[in-house]
Amino acid sequence: MDETTAVKPEFDYGVFSYASKEEMLEKSKEYWNPGKTQFWLDSGVPLVIDRREEYFIYDMSGKRLIDAHLNGGTYNLGHRNNEVVQAVTMAMQHFDIGNHHFPSLARTALAEALVKSAPAGLNKVMYGSGGGEAIDIALKTARHATQKRKIVSIIKAYHGHTGLAVGTGDDRFSKLFLSDRPEEFPHVPFNDLVAMEDALRGRDVAAVIMETIPATYGFPLPDPGYLQAVKALCEKYDALYIADEVQTGFMRTGELWGISKTGVTPDIMVLGKGISGGMYPIAAVLASDKVAGWLTEDGFGHISTFGGAELGCIAALKTLEICSRPETRSIVHYIADYVGSRLREIQALYPDWFIGIRQHGVIFGLEFAHPQGAKYVMKHLYENGVWAIFSTLDPRVLQYKPGVLLKPEVAEELLDRTELAIGRAWAEVKSL
Image 1 (tube, one colour):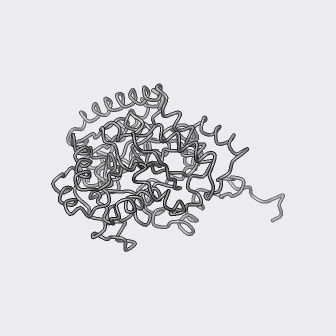
Image 2: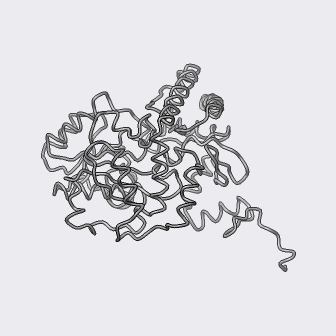
Image 3: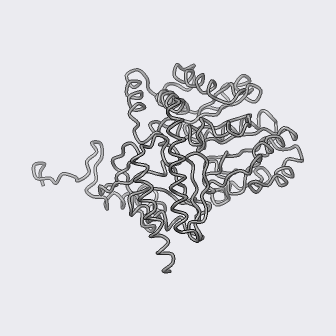
């Protein structure tokens, strides 16, 4: 067949193309991740994201979904936020990723902006390319500062999949790669101060790492005073407090940093996901001067070629500025009130099925009365034009994350579709 008679691919993206969605899925299994690809097909969610804009994503088939997952908050500001896109586009006329060895214009500007926005005392910034790497940096920093190895985290925690980070999380992931070391990474139950004190009593712990609200565990809320008490125990037993704000930062709780609402001042704070509006990989670790001593002792102690890439810093500067606007805070509070109110109305329709709402700002964990309940709801949401995901470590709970700039009319549509999906999931489970 010559060029004049060749069939044009149905999906042509310039540097690559596919004849069909089916071809793409087969190649995904062959060349990328067979387990994950097949999981979604088996779950009734054959989603391949093509076009995306604001809080909408479009499957290759053309199916439109309202995104209420946001890739864990990566798209807090919506997909391809116009202001962030413009900032990165302009930056590309001057910047690239930069050179990680040298002082950097953009890295320094972002570091200054982050320090000025952060809880008091966090005066130094270290960069990674993603949240897991940033957690590794935080743990290494804590070990250096305390000259102790042990890191305490929560049972069913999740802090990433990289070398040290995976040890702090659920053993589903750590055992797979022979990284489960209870002697170095003890886990204690969430909201259990007795267990936390027992873990710290030996004064051999470098740090306690806490998500302000544990995301992958389904957003269980800390008891009143719990995080403050954990910080006090850290101080009592000479351990550092690391606040993992990867999923709770950038206005998701109604304030810039979730930890700030508790009154806790962490020794180290980790940022990721929403930091760059989903436009460029970047993550950051903030620490006090006292804790970040290795930066002076040996500034080459951690090297990351893509950590703090300058284009990512530009995206992050614009994202931080948008999230810091008073009007953004007002929108978040409006969305939190509206969505929370509508969800409670839906819950009242199905009280024996939709049994719990865990809310803090625009962070929602929706709890269902079935061990796999959120998977059923996820499937029906997908069929009804909404994307939200079950909690990996507690599939009774749906992670439900409206965007921080969600327009009222889209919020109304989201809740109408959610009500329909929850009802249909309830009917399906009843029929089993």
